[in-house]
Structure formats: structure tokens, C-alpha cells
Length: 158
Image (tube, rainbow, N blue to C red; front, side, top):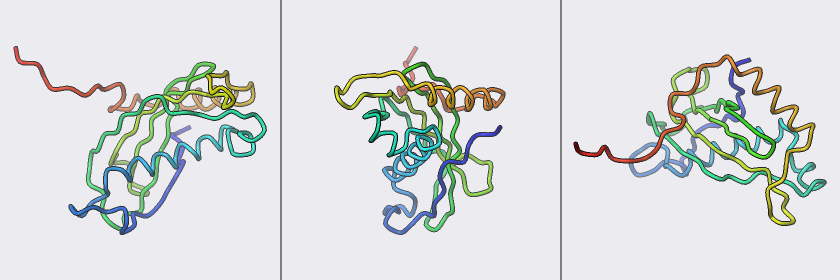
């Protein structure tokens, strides 16, 4: 199975900045909607949140801007499950022009399953965990994304 296409949209005027390309904040908005769509596919949708009192919180994310995205560009997000345990989900979103394999931006996220009553961490229920395991197994043979596991920093002088 290839990476999942979790979200698609057209870049609108309100999202474009004074440089004529997608404003940095709206890359994250697009990736956030892709995370919501993935949650729905995993069974962590609004009905589940209402019934269980559980949700996902973002612990950490990294965003790489690779190529400009202009007004009216049709884009889609491809999502990869990188890893998971009983409480955490490590994923990677890549932004592409619709039908084009070139990655325009990448977004790595670490999410935590949370009991909202605490709030405190909580294990995924078995049905969600099974869906995660299935998705991860289906994507296991895909190459590791280039822009994953990076840190921000300046090179040190020697």
C-alpha cells in the first residue's frame, strides 16, 4: 500500500502571503486537516471522542518547506505511519501538487493518545491499535522519508 492520501485542497487567496506563495502557517493548517482525516480513518473520529473521552494531542512536530506553493495550486497530502506504540503515533505528511510525486513540504509529528478527563496519556483501544498495526504493516516496505528525524541547528565551526 502506498502512503495514504488523507487531504486535498486548492490554495486560496487568503492563504497566500506578500511573497506570492503559501504563508507558512497554512502549510500546518493543511497538515492538521490531514491528521484529522487520519484520525477518522483510525476510528478516532468525533463520535469516538464523544463516547470515549479520548483524543490525540500533538507532542512535537517539524515542518520542512521544500518548494514554493502558489495561489490556486491543487495540493494533496500523503500520510505515512512511521511508528507507534500503545499510546503514541509517529507519522509523516508530505504535501504534493495533485498527481505529482515531487514533495513540496514535509511534516513529521509525534502524537499522544489522551484521556481528556485528566488530561493524561491513555492506551489506544484495541480496534484503533489494530488499524494502526495494519496501516503500518501495509506501508512497511515504503522508503523512509528523507526529511524525518532532523534537528534544527547551525553547523559548528571546527
